[in-house]
Image 1 (tube, rainbow, N blue to C red):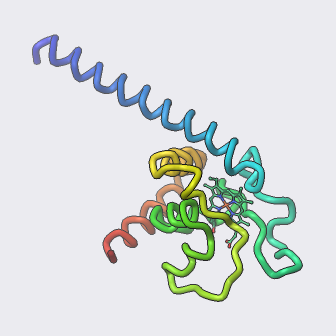
Image 2 (image 1 turned 135 degrees about the horizontal axis):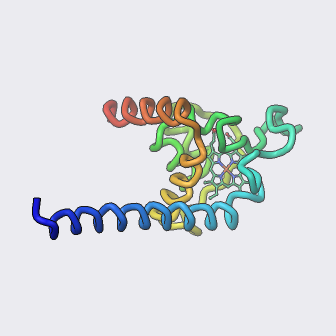
Length: 143
Ligand code: HEC
Protein backbone atom coordinates (compact mmCIF):
# COMPACT_ATOMS: atom_id res chain seq x y z
CA UNK A 1 0.00 0.00 0.00
CA UNK A 2 1.31 3.44 -0.88
CA UNK A 3 2.00 5.67 2.11
CA UNK A 4 -0.52 8.24 0.82
CA UNK A 5 -3.31 5.61 1.06
CA UNK A 6 -2.32 4.78 4.60
CA UNK A 7 -2.43 8.46 5.46
CA UNK A 8 -5.84 8.95 3.84
CA UNK A 9 -7.29 5.95 5.67
CA UNK A 10 -5.83 7.18 8.96
CA UNK A 11 -7.35 10.61 8.30
CA UNK A 12 -10.79 9.10 7.65
CA UNK A 13 -10.58 7.26 10.99
CA UNK A 14 -9.61 10.45 12.81
CA UNK A 15 -12.48 12.40 11.19
CA UNK A 16 -15.01 9.67 12.09
CA UNK A 17 -13.71 9.61 15.64
CA UNK A 18 -13.93 13.40 16.05
CA UNK A 19 -17.35 13.40 14.42
CA UNK A 20 -18.73 10.73 16.79
CA UNK A 21 -17.31 12.66 19.74
CA UNK A 22 -18.96 15.86 18.51
CA UNK A 23 -22.36 14.16 18.02
CA UNK A 24 -22.26 12.75 21.54
CA UNK A 25 -21.14 16.04 23.12
CA UNK A 26 -23.87 17.87 21.25
CA UNK A 27 -26.44 15.20 22.20
CA UNK A 28 -25.45 15.45 25.85
CA UNK A 29 -25.83 19.26 25.83
CA UNK A 30 -29.26 18.97 24.18
CA UNK A 31 -30.27 16.26 26.66
CA UNK A 32 -29.32 18.52 29.59
CA UNK A 33 -31.32 21.39 28.14
CA UNK A 34 -34.50 19.56 27.11
CA UNK A 35 -34.74 16.22 28.92
CA UNK A 36 -32.81 16.37 32.19
CA UNK A 37 -35.53 18.29 34.07
CA UNK A 38 -37.64 15.11 34.08
CA UNK A 39 -35.26 12.25 33.24
CA UNK A 40 -32.46 13.51 35.52
CA UNK A 41 -29.07 15.14 34.87
CA UNK A 42 -27.39 11.73 35.34
CA UNK A 43 -30.18 9.93 33.37
CA UNK A 44 -31.44 8.63 36.73
CA UNK A 45 -35.15 9.32 36.12
CA UNK A 46 -37.65 10.92 38.48
CA UNK A 47 -37.47 10.05 42.14
CA UNK A 48 -39.45 6.93 42.99
CA UNK A 49 -40.07 6.51 39.24
CA UNK A 50 -41.58 3.03 39.61
CA UNK A 51 -44.55 4.37 41.59
CA UNK A 52 -47.17 5.95 39.27
CA UNK A 53 -48.49 9.47 39.91
CA UNK A 54 -51.86 9.94 41.63
CA UNK A 55 -53.56 10.43 38.24
CA UNK A 56 -52.26 7.04 37.08
CA UNK A 57 -49.66 8.49 34.70
CA UNK A 58 -46.11 7.19 34.91
CA UNK A 59 -43.09 9.11 36.12
CA UNK A 60 -40.10 9.72 33.85
CA UNK A 61 -37.95 6.56 33.88
CA UNK A 62 -34.13 6.57 33.89
CA UNK A 63 -32.57 6.46 30.42
CA UNK A 64 -29.48 4.52 31.48
CA UNK A 65 -29.35 0.77 32.10
CA UNK A 66 -31.45 1.14 35.30
CA UNK A 67 -34.56 1.99 33.26
CA UNK A 68 -36.25 0.31 30.31
CA UNK A 69 -35.39 2.68 27.46
CA UNK A 70 -33.05 -0.01 26.13
CA UNK A 71 -36.01 -2.44 25.86
CA UNK A 72 -37.41 -0.38 22.98
CA UNK A 73 -36.52 -0.06 19.31
CA UNK A 74 -34.89 3.03 17.85
CA UNK A 75 -38.12 3.78 16.01
CA UNK A 76 -40.20 3.78 19.20
CA UNK A 77 -37.65 5.91 21.08
CA UNK A 78 -37.62 8.39 18.22
CA UNK A 79 -41.45 8.52 18.10
CA UNK A 80 -41.61 8.98 21.88
CA UNK A 81 -39.22 11.90 21.70
CA UNK A 82 -40.74 13.53 18.64
CA UNK A 83 -44.48 13.01 19.13
CA UNK A 84 -44.77 12.27 22.87
CA UNK A 85 -45.93 9.20 24.77
CA UNK A 86 -49.58 9.09 23.67
CA UNK A 87 -48.77 9.14 19.95
CA UNK A 88 -45.81 6.77 20.30
CA UNK A 89 -47.85 4.21 22.22
CA UNK A 90 -50.58 4.33 19.56
CA UNK A 91 -48.00 3.19 16.97
CA UNK A 92 -47.58 -0.06 18.93
CA UNK A 93 -51.31 -0.48 19.47
CA UNK A 94 -51.47 0.79 23.06
CA UNK A 95 -54.36 3.21 23.57
CA UNK A 96 -56.13 4.74 26.55
CA UNK A 97 -52.93 5.46 28.46
CA UNK A 98 -52.33 9.00 29.64
CA UNK A 99 -48.64 9.61 29.10
CA UNK A 100 -46.86 12.53 30.73
CA UNK A 101 -44.07 12.48 28.12
CA UNK A 102 -44.39 15.57 25.91
CA UNK A 103 -43.50 15.57 22.19
CA UNK A 104 -40.61 17.75 21.03
CA UNK A 105 -41.49 18.05 17.35
CA UNK A 106 -41.89 21.83 17.54
CA UNK A 107 -38.71 22.32 19.56
CA UNK A 108 -36.13 19.87 18.17
CA UNK A 109 -35.45 18.77 14.61
CA UNK A 110 -34.96 15.10 13.74
CA UNK A 111 -31.17 15.26 13.77
CA UNK A 112 -31.16 16.83 17.23
CA UNK A 113 -33.44 14.03 18.50
CA UNK A 114 -31.10 11.38 17.02
CA UNK A 115 -28.12 13.10 18.65
CA UNK A 116 -29.84 12.96 22.06
CA UNK A 117 -30.72 9.29 21.52
CA UNK A 118 -27.11 8.56 20.47
CA UNK A 119 -25.92 10.14 23.70
CA UNK A 120 -28.41 8.11 25.77
CA UNK A 121 -27.38 4.91 23.94
CA UNK A 122 -23.68 5.62 24.49
CA UNK A 123 -24.22 5.16 28.25
CA UNK A 124 -25.56 1.58 27.94
CA UNK A 125 -23.30 -1.33 28.82
CA UNK A 126 -22.57 -3.90 26.09
CA UNK A 127 -25.35 -6.33 27.09
CA UNK A 128 -28.11 -3.69 27.06
CA UNK A 129 -26.75 -2.11 23.86
CA UNK A 130 -26.70 -5.47 22.06
CA UNK A 131 -30.21 -6.33 23.23
CA UNK A 132 -31.55 -2.97 22.03
CA UNK A 133 -29.83 -3.36 18.65
CA UNK A 134 -31.50 -6.75 18.23
CA UNK A 135 -34.93 -5.26 19.03
CA UNK A 136 -34.30 -2.41 16.58
CA UNK A 137 -33.20 -4.78 13.79
CA UNK A 138 -36.30 -6.96 14.32
CA UNK A 139 -38.52 -3.89 14.32
CA UNK A 140 -36.93 -2.59 11.10
CA UNK A 141 -37.37 -6.00 9.44
CA UNK A 142 -41.09 -5.96 10.29
CA UNK A 143 -41.69 -2.59 8.61
C1 HEC B 1 -42.03 17.05 31.42
C2 HEC B 1 -41.24 15.90 31.74
C3 HEC B 1 -40.47 15.24 30.62
C4 HEC B 1 -39.51 15.80 29.79
C5 HEC B 1 -39.02 17.24 29.76
C6 HEC B 1 -39.02 14.72 28.95
N1 HEC B 1 -39.66 13.55 29.25
FE1 HEC B 1 -39.39 11.74 28.34
N2 HEC B 1 -40.78 10.91 29.56
C7 HEC B 1 -41.48 11.57 30.55
C8 HEC B 1 -42.36 10.65 31.22
C9 HEC B 1 -43.29 10.99 32.37
C10 HEC B 1 -42.17 9.39 30.59
C11 HEC B 1 -42.90 8.07 30.90
C12 HEC B 1 -44.27 8.18 30.32
C13 HEC B 1 -44.80 7.00 29.62
O1 HEC B 1 -44.09 6.01 29.41
O2 HEC B 1 -45.95 7.11 29.21
C14 HEC B 1 -41.17 9.60 29.54
C15 HEC B 1 -40.73 8.61 28.70
C16 HEC B 1 -39.79 8.78 27.72
C17 HEC B 1 -39.35 7.75 26.81
C18 HEC B 1 -39.81 6.30 26.81
C19 HEC B 1 -38.87 5.55 27.72
C20 HEC B 1 -39.30 4.17 28.10
O3 HEC B 1 -38.45 3.46 28.64
O4 HEC B 1 -40.46 3.81 27.95
C21 HEC B 1 -38.40 8.31 26.00
C22 HEC B 1 -37.60 7.63 24.89
C23 HEC B 1 -38.26 9.69 26.40
N3 HEC B 1 -39.12 9.95 27.43
C24 HEC B 1 -37.37 10.56 25.83
C25 HEC B 1 -37.25 11.90 26.22
C26 HEC B 1 -36.32 12.81 25.59
C27 HEC B 1 -35.33 12.43 24.49
C28 HEC B 1 -36.51 14.03 26.18
C29 HEC B 1 -35.84 15.32 25.86
C30 HEC B 1 -35.87 15.73 24.47
C31 HEC B 1 -37.56 13.85 27.19
N4 HEC B 1 -37.96 12.54 27.18
C32 HEC B 1 -38.03 14.87 27.99
C33 HEC B 1 -41.37 12.91 30.88
C34 HEC B 1 -40.55 13.82 30.27
